[in-house]
Image (cartoon, rainbow, N blue to C red):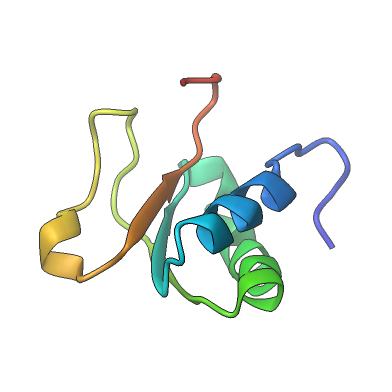
Length: 85
């Protein structure tokens, strides 16, 4: 179970995955959250049934995204330190 101090909006993310009918989803986390990547992936998989891939490469901001076209994913979800919409 994730600690309370992290509000990763997993219900919101799960709803977006379902809404987009995404089958393969990649999650990208800053280094401080990478130790929790497995827990986050498990929650999202349980709520959506999607295959959740964990990007373990860099995550230095919104412009630092993995090669989405080469990963064959339907959706990339990136968490950062500040809200970005």
